[in-house]
Image 1 (cartoon, rainbow over the protein chains, first blue to last red):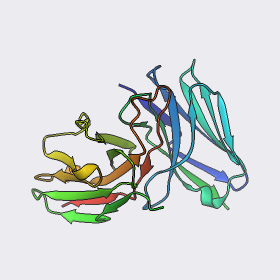
Image 2 (cartoon, one colour):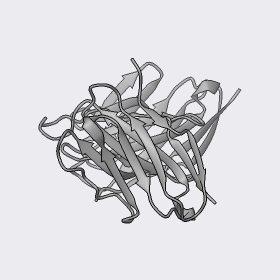
Image 3 (tube, rainbow over the protein chains, first blue to last red):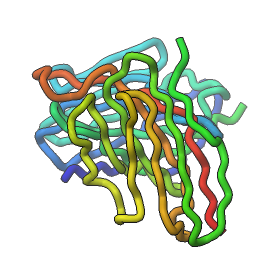
Image 4 (cartoon, one colour):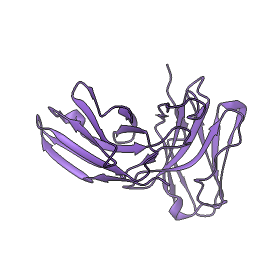
Length: 112
Length: 120
């Protein structure tokens, strides 16, 4: 089955700096890569996703890049704000899969 | 509209007791998923329901775990004879339709707030 690895496990940045979280996956059949943000006491919320037919996707301060050859994808948050502090999870899946395969999460702390 | 809801939000039980966790998916969503999140870990898939099809139970860790989905809507996850290692946050998610049958497409999963289970 699919195996998703995520790094780093914790990340602290100064407000206004950029944050980058990286994930690798093992199954070349994977073609869907969502990123979720989980705040304390809440369920994960989708913040951005990318499919295998594109290499990069942006939504305001958030961007995701995908390298299918190397089987890795990354989340980039620019101009970080304290409210970006949360745990971020990457995931991978493929068409007709019945579930998402998650990384172990990155705890991001943005220092005011 | 209303999101995925789960109840109870917290459940404390004694080892050996049975527990039931409930999930109300987003109205109209045909696919429903259960995941388990242990402390400091990622989400572990448990079970998947799609319409009237037989559920995918491949993620259930033991025969003490079971789930039902009545009328294609509300789902209940039951853990029998709970053990301390069952302590975790149990998350439910729903999506508009299954991943199968739409080539090249995978639907977004919307998560509920979870039920924190503590087995003493």
